[in-house]
Amino acid sequence: MSTVTTAIDIKKIRSQFPILDQEVNGKPLIYFDNAASSQTAKSVVDALVNFYEKDHANIHRGIHTLAERSTKAFEETRERVHQFINSAEADEIIFTKGTTESINLVAQAWGSKFLKSGDEILISHLEHHSNIVPWQLAAERTGAIIKVIPINEKGEILIEEYKKLLSTKTKLVAVNYISNSLGTINPVKEIIAEAIKVNATTLIDAAQAAPHIKIDVQELNCDFLALSSHKMYGPTGVGVLYGRREVLEATPPYQGGGEMIKDVSFSGTTFNDIPYKFEAGTPNIGGVIAFKSAMDFIDEIGHEAIQAYEHELLEYATDRLNQIPGFTPIGTAENKASVISFLIDNVHPYDLGQLLDVKGIAVRTGHHCTQPLMDFFEIDGTVRASFAVYNTKEEIDVFCESLQKIVERFS
Ligand code: C6P
Image 1 (cartoon, rainbow, N blue to C red):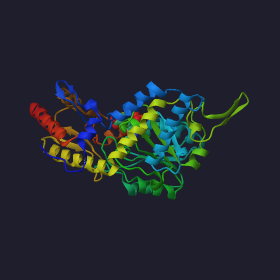
Image 2: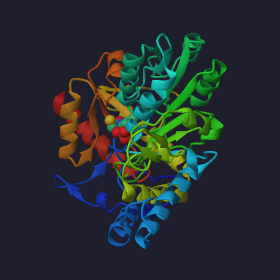
Image 3: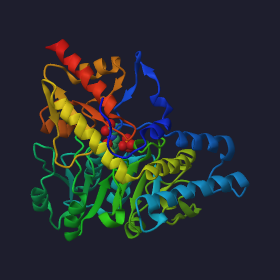
């Protein structure tokens, strides 16, 4: 058994995740499906319970005590996100259901005003369907054209090819920070800087980045950034859209309803200020409030420590997996987060996923909502192991030994 060298109190961290302390199919659970959804920290669950047991009321509407309490806690999370991603102000933080809704909001609301026939939208070949389909719908509505930034065999964006695609016709560049299927960390700062040269608006899909690396929207200088709480040890059904003030103010509302208005009459409506203009209806109040505890959990460990530890897990697993006969990694970028997508000769990914589940190991199999990327590699899908800060080298040992046995059975 190996020991982890990076300074991190794994016992303390794991104590925040009682769900990990169980058997699945008679074996201790090993949860390596964190890119799909990470487990929820106990402090987050406690915050949710506390809200429903003590503070539940609708927000921004009532003047009674519970309404004031829940409104205050909700707005405290907005402040917390503002700090967490270093936006210029808290009003630039909009709560959504998740990254998918955040991107759809931009594609529909911003797209309806700022995209017109012949305009170009640049996305990369690495994108999740959530950063492809909303643009296809926007393109259909407006006559804009989608252009795809090519990648190499390692799964890295070809920056020189990207630069060639940029022109005065480019109205939007939308790319992910970290690829969910391959783990590639994209040079988003450089991508944004190049987009700014042609006055293009930029959107960063940070769904996979937010749990792993420090995000600083002012340093990145992006116009929009999207993330999901459930990949950050927080609750499902909560996401964030960051938007630069000027861009948000210029963007029309996404949905109509309660809270997003200043004044409504049958002859017309005036809209609320940002961020409320984009938050129609009653949101996931409890989820948003509990999301604050997820950011506290991440910051207590620190992004630097998280990144160093997860990188150690990535290198350890990669070395061990490379020794397994028939192992082929899919995505071998120089700059990678803790995601390993792979194939094993003669074993279908679904069979592998099922056989690993029998051993209590949770991985994701399939196309990971990135079918164009799978087409690039001429495969239907992969097996994907994605590590979080609560995973250990000992779990990787069990995973590799289990894989080895499966390979032996199939050879
Ligand atoms: N990827 C995965 O297993 P939502 O579902 O809205 O929270 O996030 C969508 C999304 C957008 N962009 C990226 C880069 C993502 O990874 C995801 C979610 C999960 O890879 C579920 S498909």
